[in-house]
Image 1 (tube, rainbow, N blue to C red):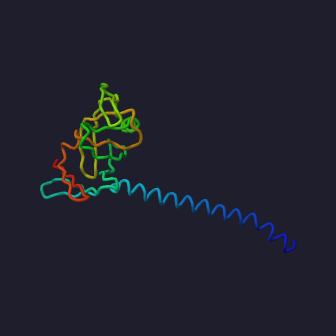
Image 2: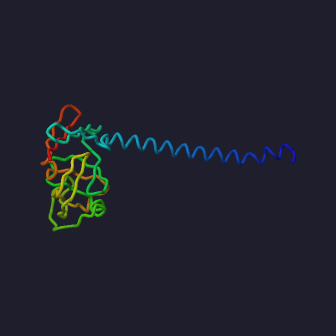
Image 3: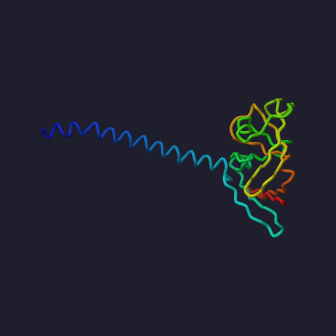
Length: 176
Protein backbone atom coordinates (compact mmCIF):
# COMPACT_ATOMS: atom_id res chain seq x y z
CA UNK A 1 0.00 0.00 0.00
CA UNK A 2 1.48 3.31 -1.02
CA UNK A 3 1.43 6.40 1.25
CA UNK A 4 -1.20 8.32 -0.79
CA UNK A 5 -3.68 5.45 -0.34
CA UNK A 6 -3.22 5.45 3.45
CA UNK A 7 -3.99 9.16 3.82
CA UNK A 8 -7.00 8.83 1.47
CA UNK A 9 -8.53 6.02 3.57
CA UNK A 10 -7.90 7.91 6.84
CA UNK A 11 -9.98 10.93 5.71
CA UNK A 12 -13.42 9.31 6.19
CA UNK A 13 -12.42 8.12 9.68
CA UNK A 14 -11.18 11.59 10.64
CA UNK A 15 -14.32 13.21 9.22
CA UNK A 16 -16.51 10.71 11.10
CA UNK A 17 -14.67 11.44 14.36
CA UNK A 18 -15.10 15.18 13.81
CA UNK A 19 -18.84 14.80 13.21
CA UNK A 20 -19.24 12.55 16.29
CA UNK A 21 -17.30 15.06 18.41
CA UNK A 22 -19.48 17.94 17.20
CA UNK A 23 -22.71 16.02 17.90
CA UNK A 24 -21.51 15.05 21.40
CA UNK A 25 -20.42 18.63 22.10
CA UNK A 26 -23.77 20.04 21.00
CA UNK A 27 -25.56 17.42 23.14
CA UNK A 28 -23.52 18.28 26.23
CA UNK A 29 -24.02 22.02 25.72
CA UNK A 30 -27.78 21.44 25.32
CA UNK A 31 -27.91 19.50 28.60
CA UNK A 32 -25.85 22.17 30.38
CA UNK A 33 -27.97 25.11 29.21
CA UNK A 34 -31.25 23.22 29.73
CA UNK A 35 -30.24 22.58 33.35
CA UNK A 36 -29.18 26.22 33.74
CA UNK A 37 -32.54 27.47 32.45
CA UNK A 38 -34.42 25.02 34.68
CA UNK A 39 -32.50 26.23 37.76
CA UNK A 40 -33.26 29.83 36.79
CA UNK A 41 -37.00 29.08 36.39
CA UNK A 42 -37.06 27.11 39.65
CA UNK A 43 -34.27 28.21 42.00
CA UNK A 44 -35.84 26.03 44.72
CA UNK A 45 -35.65 22.60 43.07
CA UNK A 46 -34.41 20.86 46.22
CA UNK A 47 -35.50 23.06 49.14
CA UNK A 48 -33.51 22.87 52.36
CA UNK A 49 -35.43 22.70 55.63
CA UNK A 50 -34.43 23.75 59.11
CA UNK A 51 -36.12 22.91 62.38
CA UNK A 52 -36.88 25.62 64.91
CA UNK A 53 -36.65 25.29 68.70
CA UNK A 54 -40.45 25.05 68.79
CA UNK A 55 -40.46 22.04 66.43
CA UNK A 56 -41.48 24.16 63.46
CA UNK A 57 -40.16 23.36 60.00
CA UNK A 58 -38.82 26.32 58.02
CA UNK A 59 -38.14 26.40 54.27
CA UNK A 60 -36.60 29.48 52.61
CA UNK A 61 -37.54 30.12 48.97
CA UNK A 62 -36.00 32.47 46.42
CA UNK A 63 -38.08 34.25 43.80
CA UNK A 64 -37.47 33.41 40.13
CA UNK A 65 -36.76 36.13 37.50
CA UNK A 66 -40.49 36.39 36.70
CA UNK A 67 -41.19 37.22 40.37
CA UNK A 68 -42.83 33.87 41.20
CA UNK A 69 -42.07 31.46 43.99
CA UNK A 70 -41.60 28.03 42.47
CA UNK A 71 -40.44 25.03 44.49
CA UNK A 72 -39.85 21.32 43.93
CA UNK A 73 -41.71 18.82 46.05
CA UNK A 74 -43.93 15.77 46.01
CA UNK A 75 -47.61 14.93 45.59
CA UNK A 76 -47.86 11.57 47.29
CA UNK A 77 -44.63 10.01 45.96
CA UNK A 78 -44.66 11.79 42.59
CA UNK A 79 -42.22 14.61 41.90
CA UNK A 80 -43.94 17.94 41.27
CA UNK A 81 -43.14 21.61 40.80
CA UNK A 82 -45.29 23.93 42.93
CA UNK A 83 -46.12 27.49 41.97
CA UNK A 84 -47.31 29.35 45.07
CA UNK A 85 -50.66 30.93 44.25
CA UNK A 86 -52.49 32.67 47.09
CA UNK A 87 -55.30 33.47 44.63
CA UNK A 88 -56.12 29.79 44.10
CA UNK A 89 -58.65 28.33 46.52
CA UNK A 90 -57.34 24.77 46.19
CA UNK A 91 -54.19 23.01 45.18
CA UNK A 92 -54.72 22.48 41.42
CA UNK A 93 -53.02 19.65 39.55
CA UNK A 94 -52.81 18.71 35.89
CA UNK A 95 -54.64 15.46 35.20
CA UNK A 96 -51.52 13.56 34.08
CA UNK A 97 -49.73 14.29 37.36
CA UNK A 98 -52.89 13.47 39.33
CA UNK A 99 -53.01 10.04 37.67
CA UNK A 100 -49.30 9.44 38.32
CA UNK A 101 -49.81 10.41 41.97
CA UNK A 102 -52.74 8.01 42.30
CA UNK A 103 -55.47 10.64 42.72
CA UNK A 104 -58.98 9.79 41.65
CA UNK A 105 -61.42 12.21 40.08
CA UNK A 106 -64.22 13.18 42.42
CA UNK A 107 -67.29 15.25 41.69
CA UNK A 108 -67.01 17.78 38.84
CA UNK A 109 -67.43 21.52 39.34
CA UNK A 110 -66.75 24.72 37.42
CA UNK A 111 -63.81 26.94 38.27
CA UNK A 112 -62.89 30.40 37.02
CA UNK A 113 -59.30 30.69 35.83
CA UNK A 114 -57.27 33.32 34.03
CA UNK A 115 -58.08 31.38 30.84
CA UNK A 116 -61.82 31.31 31.51
CA UNK A 117 -64.14 28.78 33.12
CA UNK A 118 -63.08 25.13 33.21
CA UNK A 119 -64.45 21.90 34.64
CA UNK A 120 -62.31 20.57 37.50
CA UNK A 121 -62.67 17.45 39.61
CA UNK A 122 -62.42 17.28 43.39
CA UNK A 123 -59.60 15.19 44.87
CA UNK A 124 -57.71 14.71 48.12
CA UNK A 125 -53.92 14.55 48.25
CA UNK A 126 -52.82 12.06 50.89
CA UNK A 127 -49.36 13.65 51.26
CA UNK A 128 -48.00 16.92 49.91
CA UNK A 129 -44.34 17.60 50.69
CA UNK A 130 -42.07 20.61 50.30
CA UNK A 131 -38.68 20.03 51.90
CA UNK A 132 -39.51 18.62 55.34
CA UNK A 133 -42.95 20.24 55.41
CA UNK A 134 -45.47 17.41 55.11
CA UNK A 135 -49.18 18.14 54.78
CA UNK A 136 -51.76 15.35 54.78
CA UNK A 137 -55.27 15.06 53.37
CA UNK A 138 -55.08 18.28 51.37
CA UNK A 139 -58.13 19.32 49.34
CA UNK A 140 -57.29 19.61 45.64
CA UNK A 141 -58.75 20.02 42.19
CA UNK A 142 -57.74 18.11 39.08
CA UNK A 143 -57.74 20.33 35.99
CA UNK A 144 -57.73 18.30 32.74
CA UNK A 145 -56.88 21.50 30.79
CA UNK A 146 -53.52 21.91 32.59
CA UNK A 147 -50.38 20.29 31.20
CA UNK A 148 -46.94 19.54 32.60
CA UNK A 149 -45.94 18.90 36.20
CA UNK A 150 -46.58 22.37 37.62
CA UNK A 151 -49.06 22.40 40.48
CA UNK A 152 -50.76 25.56 41.73
CA UNK A 153 -50.17 25.56 45.47
CA UNK A 154 -53.38 27.22 46.59
CA UNK A 155 -54.86 28.14 49.93
CA UNK A 156 -56.12 24.64 50.79
CA UNK A 157 -52.42 23.89 51.52
CA UNK A 158 -51.07 27.37 52.28
CA UNK A 159 -53.60 27.96 55.08
CA UNK A 160 -51.58 25.45 57.15
CA UNK A 161 -48.33 27.33 56.56
CA UNK A 162 -47.19 30.66 57.92
CA UNK A 163 -45.31 32.63 55.27
CA UNK A 164 -43.36 35.87 55.32
CA UNK A 165 -41.84 37.69 52.36
CA UNK A 166 -38.77 39.88 52.71
CA UNK A 167 -37.07 41.15 49.55
CA UNK A 168 -36.65 38.27 47.10
CA UNK A 169 -37.08 35.62 49.80
CA UNK A 170 -40.18 33.89 51.09
CA UNK A 171 -40.01 31.98 54.35
CA UNK A 172 -42.45 29.11 54.83
CA UNK A 173 -42.96 28.03 58.44
CA UNK A 174 -45.00 24.99 59.40
CA UNK A 175 -45.78 23.91 62.95
CA UNK A 176 -46.88 20.24 62.94
